[in-house]
Amino acid sequence: MSEIQRHSFDVLVIGAGGAGLRAAIESRLAGKKTAIISKSLFGKAHTVMAEGGAAAAMGNVNSKDNWKVHFRDTMRGGKFLNHFRMAELHAKEAPQRIWELETYGALFDRTKDGKISQRNFGGHEYPRLAHVGDRTGLELIRTLQQKIVSLQQDDKKNSGSYEAKLQVFAETTITELMLDGDRVAGAFGYRRDNGEFLLFEAPAVILATGGVGKSFKVTSNSWEYTGDGHALALRAGGSLVNMEFVQFHPTGMVWPPSVKGILVTESVRGDGGVLRNSDGKRFMFDYIPDVFKAQYADNEAEADRWYDDQENNRRPPELLPRDEVARSINSEVKAGRGSPRGGVFLDVSTRLKPEEIIKRLPSMHHQFKELADVDITKEPMEVGPTCHYVMGGVEVDPDTQQSKVAGLFAAGEVSGGMHGSNRLGGNSLSDLLVFGKRAGEHASKYLDALDERPRVSDADSATVAAAAEAVLVAELPDDAEDPYALQAELQQVMNDLVGIIRRAGELEEALVKLDDLKKRVKNVKAIGGRAYNPGWHLALDLRNMVIVSECIAKAALERSESRGGHTREDAPGMDPSWRKVNLVCTLPGPDVALKRQPLPSMPEELLALFERSELAKYMTNEELERYDAAVS
Ligand code: FAD
Image (cartoon, rainbow, N blue to C red; front, side, top):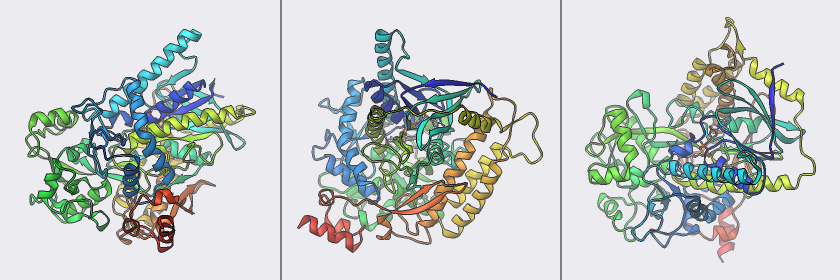
């Protein structure tokens, strides 16, 4: 039997992006012995790649902004499918979390009068994104890591060891959660370099593993985003909500092929960039949906005036929520009005002076110059939709972030509910701060209330270790499946059949193919041992990718309407009766089970924040009667 190193902690945080780090800080501040596990290098997570900023209604640039406006924008962006309580907590607490980052040492860009500067972004009524050029995520991670180091320095002073209360395990992948009865008891994983097996016993586990983008062929996501946390929660008895909603960011690079999908930040449009087709037409004016007509300019003159006078003009349609812009670009390309390399043109060079572009968008300038030999101060970029973010995730209690499994919490992109059918840009960085903190706090409280710590049995850890090792062979058998080939097949299926525009027949075809892939994953083999073996790593990740893809495809087939990040060509438009329904996935056996669950209904004081005419675009008559009663 393989040797397994045992570790014991109070709180285990899986993931070292913003959500994981913020959660770990909170549980350490509560005095809990905390471990942070990260599949990649410490400091390398999607959070570090975030460019545009973190949305928080601080009202620094427009004093009319407040939590109520942010709440309304978030609900609108999610097409009213968001869990109202998460959207409420997020809007109320985001400013505090940003100011708190300053006390940890963050240096945001400033307004002329010295406040934290805030920029425009799609779907946000006022300039709201706190930012550091187009490298906001880097500052966020730097600051959170600095806070962790300072806490470790305190621990060294008090107890003689930097790792007495906070220990980081970088380049370590968790493959399974461990249970004691129906409570979580820890997690099992391996070190990616030498393959050592590790067992972490912990009564409280926080999933902060980010997204699922690597199941799609064209994506802004990097290699480690294989839906691990989503799948870990499912296998432990948890549930996933909203999995049909996948965000295709409208602007990814389309060329050269080696970098296809890499993100082009929304800040380019927020700072004045416009989208044009091959005829030079600014086409977004043709795609303003009825529900947004009151807020968006229908002509170029008004859209351009908005950059200088936001009080008296409506916003440019390039700043519609991401799902709308992505679909519009898709339609232009399909209609034969795309750019030479299959995207559309995004131009900031005719809108801002070169020195201003380099100051505001340094990473974009560098990215296009280095990767595509395009100077964005002189010429337009070519861009197209790319799989970017998953709205769906672990179903959690909105206040505590606890999942259906006792002791298992989730925060950040891996959790579901907050963004409904579509996330607004900038709302992820604030989401992970708000709910990361809450997860750390409530994991600690859960621990305080425990009578007896759960235990992981030796037999259970040996079984999990054996399953991980079973993939390894000295020689490939004839029927062995290659992990890289299988991943490429999966990505093609998801791209072609479960992508930005969906149809029932194609989703059914996808499910047949996914079923086949699920069977073949059992035969995936990797030659060699556990040390330095990326084929083995991918083989283990594939189990997660296939199961999460099944959730996405099943939910997408079931939801026969189009809403946010789920567009059904055969069921266009929103259906108010679907607004009352969440689709929830569980894993009772080898196949994903899907059930319809009523959406929690918004309390009257929140309903009353909206105009009746707006709610009428989304809600059933029965729901509107509640509204009438609330405001009368
Ligand atoms: P992540 O930051 O993704 O971190 C996940 C962590 O989990 C990583 O440490 C990873 O190694 C670890 N992990 C995963 N699986 C395992 C496992 N099995 N075992 C151990 N560890 C594991 N959002 C905004 O709000 N504003 C922006 O401007 C913005 N720009 C973006 C730009 C890009 C290019 C991308 C890709 C995303 C952007 N987003 C933005 C989205 C946002 O960055 C992410 O949604 C957010 O950072 C997710 O944070 P997280 O803490 O939930 O997870």
